[in-house]
Length: 202
Image (cartoon, rainbow, N blue to C red; front, side):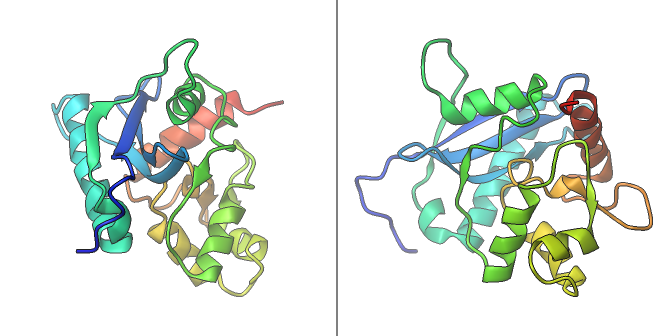
């Protein structure tokens, strides 16, 4: 395994509960630049407590990083969560907490670093341009990414997205209706869409 330079700090992580649900939004980031490296939705299984679901998701995210970005995964992760704290600059933690509290544009300013082809990078950038509360179809995403006929590839970019929620692939829905599939389950996707619809700027 490739090891990063010794001076790079451990990755950090933070989480915020989506109000009215048992879901937790989780982000793993590099503290030297506050860039999100992986993120997702912790979904409890059965009677599993939220903390256990978060722990399971963190393992899954690190596993995906080991596969897709081994130099990032080699940095390991500080086991302690970062919490929003008044008077301190906790950029990622503050943004995640603000999003959960109803500021659905709060994640827009976060930096994201994830490996991918030029089309996937264009698709992920296009995802971040989708207005909260106004989901688009996969065809519309392909058009925004500069390749209107690449609808299947646009779907592949959503499936490969390592920074879910921060890069909002949940804002893409099938043209046939419904919320469609999602790595963290259709119920989680529906909850995110409902949260954004309820708090979208007028």
